[in-house]
Image 1: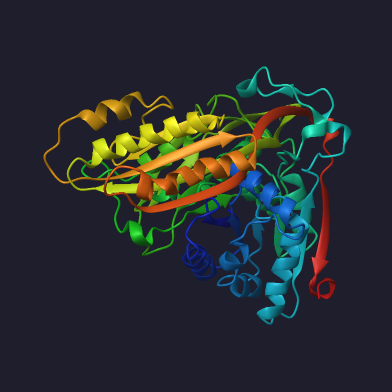
Image 2 (image 1 turned 60 degrees about the vertical axis):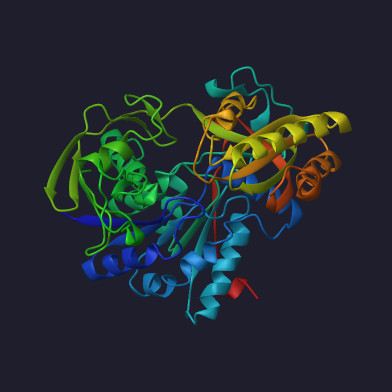
Length: 461
């Protein structure tokens, strides 16, 4: 039965830049039809991209896109392996132009880039009278305050771009599994209401979308769950058949592992309802999925079921979120915890004295931070606990304010601890950034109008 291999070379913005190289090498060595997906766009990442584009209209796409593509673009073009990525973020057209400039630099004779747009809903009637997603129940949308609003698109426009000859497809906000499902629709010609196959393709894309999470990344727990050679972990490859059955594997000889445990963990990752995982393409039911190890680092997946796609699509809306002032300073040696705790109390008292209003958080990194709340109850208790060995502690202050001036003044108070604070403080650093707040709303499908366009080398300077 005919097979399409799909490799994933990135699971999020910030992933390893060399990860796509072994994946593409394995796809080339295997021969036959293949595609490469690069998933780099989380909701937080998109908000950051929108902020970047506000400062630079030509920016707003994945900053590492060219670094990810540079080592593999030539081989992918030479071997007919299309690349699909949501690295367009807030500016798919800008990302496409950057890819074409890279193609010219690499001496590629021809390069056709497909651009999928229509996810940006600003200035359209799609934002009128929207209901919030249940996780943001009670939120009210003021269209005049919107910085950005991006709806999750499905696989159909990606498939359209590929059928139009695109060698690289750049999207903005698209459902992560659609990056894999799009090539399947284009290659196999599955109907857009073939729910069993769409379910299989979406399940496959869901397993691939986080990169190495399905091959041992975010899995290792020494003594309980061992992962070989995590420093050279192999990213996943799916072998999809026309009937919807598929195998998850990874490049031969790479680190990491693929087994029932890694596949089960990723299959259940972020599923609100395993019987009704809503995507733009299909309602996925994984409750009857069957997994079978058919060899080392090979897990066969079958049994995904699907139903009609939902009538409403999820949109991420970005709104002004004020400013964040942040600073850190280290304390080491005997009594480091109590000195750092005194520094934290000093900072809170200074903010009150200066009349700086906002949400304040103080952490003792190295003692307690992740598990504590903003009130710092665990931190205060831990700072007073006896400890006989030398310590080192990193104190962190974070203040959310409405104005840049207040955020800068709060961050400056951390620097002042170098002389005004407890003994032994050092290594202070601060930063101030404007924040974007995100909420999710549900958009009627008929209001969303995806569009596909193409650029070639002749279209860029």
